[in-house]
Image 1 (tube, rainbow, N blue to C red):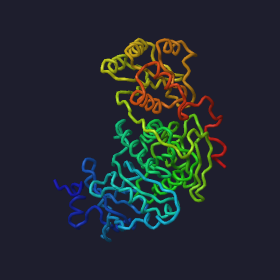
Image 2: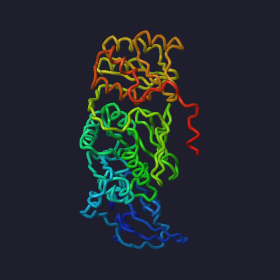
Image 3: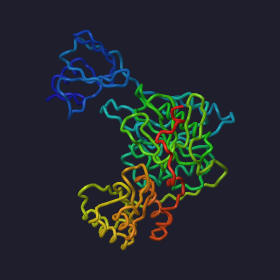
Image 4: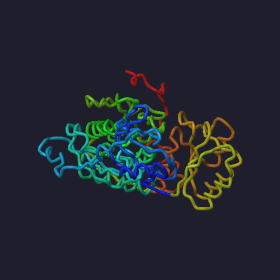
Length: 452
């Protein structure tokens, strides 16, 4: 069997006989008169239809074309890798009194492009490449860039939070006016929470930014998000760990969400992120570079000395309650020596009554158990029903209106950086440190200012 850049069968023979390879710009004319212009993509062998070739169109989308329908295909050239000039634009700005900001790249879609050898989207762009694309940033700040890792967000771990926190702390110590962290969107809220707790007394904002579409696609949201993120980093009055992403599906506004109150709510939309049990902290007009604060500020920008307390316990687990959840799962966690358990309970914070004995054993063994709600909006209240009262009696810690992921990160931080004493853990966990707990919620899930 012929294998040619992932293609097999008739498609492999068709392309190899014409000396066409992935990365070639091609003009394809079909027998019915339709014309396609784009880049020939490799074909994943595992899923390959032996008569289909794949073209990436100018609009960023891929189209599969059966070779039986092709009248002609012409090579128009080949894509060339983007190169950077050795003189970076920061040098032009050094004599200008402008704020300084640092971009720390961790990978993710915002730092990704299509690999034309494999057809996959991979973390492949250096941070200076990202910045070089956007000349508008010259009017925002003098920007330095550093890649501290290149991974997708699904590979982020608690020990990774510690690395990112140390690097952000280092930039604060060096006197920058703001730190921007390029991060994959899937677990961005976890890392934003981790840096909220892990760096105390922050003098400047830490702004997490990502993209839903890779930076080499015409429909990418990376440019819009980066301009907003750097604007927030150097101009915002607050000094919190925040997520700055699209506020609508179009390039209209950018919303700034407090890192301990945000969740990714959609798999692919540009406006995937939403503040939960809180208003967004600010709204950014990317055209005018204006920032309108719309939420309560907990940490203000100022001349402060940051404190690094960024040890996270990786023996904390997040368990989702579902019908039929087995008692053996909790018993296994206890027997394996886990240090903390966060439960994503139903409704007001419930779990099957048959598990309460295991919860009691966990707490008796010095393992705190925290109760959150998978409802997201609203508060945990263990005083309403008998199940909740039984959980309170054995020592479960209610997470109030904290998101499950924020509760997971906060417990990991408390156990890793602060204490493992159960009394102190409860006291710290139920104390509102950074806006992670709201007693009162806005009446509207989407406030009126959003539509103005």
